[in-house]
Length: 332
Image (cartoon, rainbow, N blue to C red; front, side, top):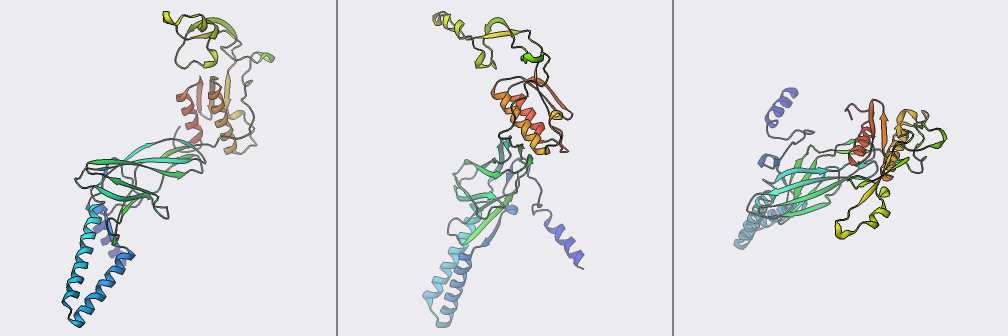
């Protein structure tokens, strides 16, 4: 009997009640079936007061008491309608989510659009795990608003936040309307960079013996026009100073060729095996950031992931992504 009742409730509510844990892809409109409303504590106290006033009016046959009771009840019903309309039919859509390092706060951007002719006031937004909502916004008629919700990150990998709760008690606070929204947004959390670790392994693949020279920066071959991505340290300031700006002078950089063929290789397999896995990943993260800061081309090796020597934002992002997803089922 109990199993049949549960099955009936599941069939009855499954068509309109949002499933717990289901992700809302794309734009979501808060239709009538997604908005819930209940009286607040103040609303329950107000209802008790009206009930006492009504009983007293009946007992003593007070005409003004009846008028005041029904007026107060009418105000409560109007407040219930306006509280519901303040949240219903809002359009929700997820925004951009930037990657962060473990220990930092991941920011999830959410967009709220009001396509109706009525402005919406005091809409509170936060994740379901928060004790009290921390963000409030007003959305004008035919307007929109963007809200950033922060979630602390503790471990590397994908960070999937809890569902978002939108609520309002506008205008009188006698009722609370709320709705759940779980956007299909997640943030990639990189390993925390190691602090105070060893310097870059510049002699990782040294083929020049004790010289320890870096590939492509040994033999000066002249100067050439500046290209996007060139290191500021390679600017040929003497040649730049000789160029006449009135004749269309431009930036030039030093050009190197030859060398010993040595390159900086960040190889996870060469780290001491006795170190903790997360510590090794943190050290690799630190080396990637240091190499980018010093504008040094570097190769990257992590398990089955091999990247040739390079530098730049795309190369760094690919290496950090591989470190963040190392050991997970999802390929880097």
